[in-house]
Image (cartoon, rainbow, N blue to C red; front, side):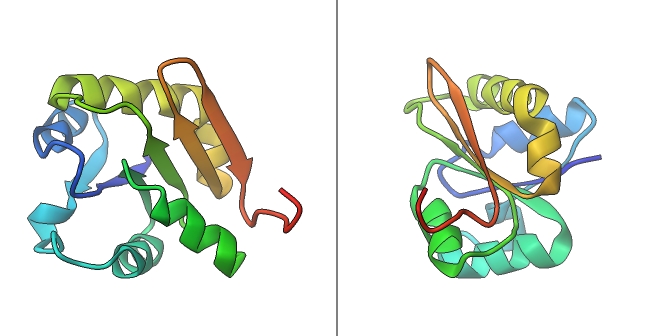
Length: 125
């Protein structure tokens, strides 16, 4: 089962919907990590086997610059999602690129596409 850690920008109710769908899902607010740095969230996710779900590009940047092999991160580039919409986007992304995320990857989700890059990202990418 994939473990999901939702960043602060993702509606908190999304965690409930994803848990009801059978995922081990936690929102950073439930861990009292709402004010934690992106690096602290990545460290927690990596140490506890989570895939990070976020609206924030900084997570991808940190992992690329560090040439890290994990944790996997899904960046949603769709603003204004309510909990059910965010849950649907996450479920679709996991359906499309779940295997890559299990192996260590960065995914970007927009209205039009899901792009995925394996970790660590090569310097020329």
